[in-house]
Length: 146
Length: 146
DNA sequence: TACTATTGCTTGCGAACTCAACTATACCAA
DNA sequence: TTGGTATAGTTGAGTTCGCAAGCAATAGTA
Image (cartoon, rainbow over all chains, first blue to last red; front, side):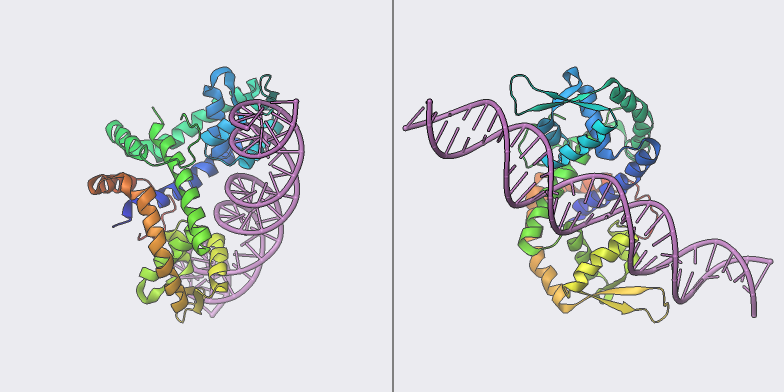
């Protein structure tokens, strides 16, 4: 067996996330996962999600999502709403400020991802890459729509 | 533009490293990057590398490699040797114990990577994947042979 | 030769994550 | 209805990592 693909996968991820994270952080004060969470909320019905679903979607532990949302809540970008039908769950809701923040950050970030990732492939190659990566297991088994 | 490939890339990495790291940790007390460093040293001439090259290869910051090697040194798997021709550099040298440790851990780990990653593709697809990932920038620009 | 810039490496610090443990609520089966 | 199990979420502790700052040694330049 050769592990070239796996190694390249690890290296590329480390290098890309380091650079993208640094740009996003200095320009908008967001981590890559903060942004990821904002994307999910922005695209969700009513701009809200159960915290646990959010965690599974962005591949974060339950405690991880608690702390990440803590930051977004402090900044006023995400709100915390109780669920009426199930007292265990709490909704994470994107505020109007949060939506604006995301729209603002996404312009630069999308262009950064474009520059460092997407532009390296043709559209066809990108599809092929997505298809290949889609075969990898998410392991946890929880709901993960995106 | 669509970001499906990029998103899949992020998710797949998060899920795979979480699982592989956890298996490696419980079975051999190694992190994924510990293992990566051992691989590099094991395959290097004289089983040694300059710490800075090691850092660039596994995509770790200088401080990151200092702390990682600290652990491997404490365990007796890696030694620290001064360089005769340049007093600034220190060699990281794999000890015999370290080599044994690596050989022992690699059996299980290679099979885990095989299970969760490689086996999802044909050999041809794996090559294609490696080729595509190879186009992504390592950004830093430092020496990175593997 | 002397001065400056660069390189290798370490340390303090803070941010982000995971695991384990715990609380509270909901579901399910006898 | 009651008791056991699963689920949602938080908190404490420990780990890993990067950045900024600093030190020592080398390389480059005038």
